[in-house]
Image 1 (cartoon, rainbow, N blue to C red):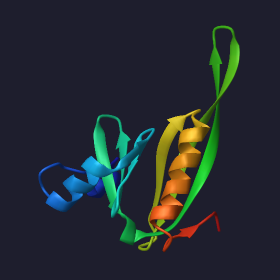
Image 2 (image 1 turned 60 degrees about the vertical axis):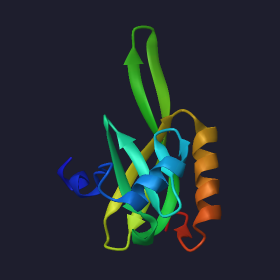
Image 3 (image 1 turned 135 degrees about the vertical axis):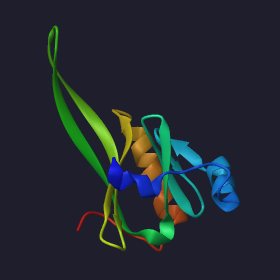
Length: 120
């Protein structure tokens, strides 16, 4: 959690970010703005400016779980961000909503063509 502290989004601190947050497009737990990417983890929102991002790609994480009637596999949709300073961020988009993840990734490529896409 400590490494996420520097990405914590606080409303009312930066008017430009607040406007970007309001007008951003939400897909699952991620909100794509004109100059930043916001994501929700727990009860808090976090933000990273797109000019800090070097590369982005989608990842599907399979999570196997045992329940009363057997085992279940969840497909967690994630957006992976590699930042210019070498940091890596893993943003959970949703559990199982592949369409939301695909739409978010497509919108991101359209709005921010300057970024590199795909896993290295």
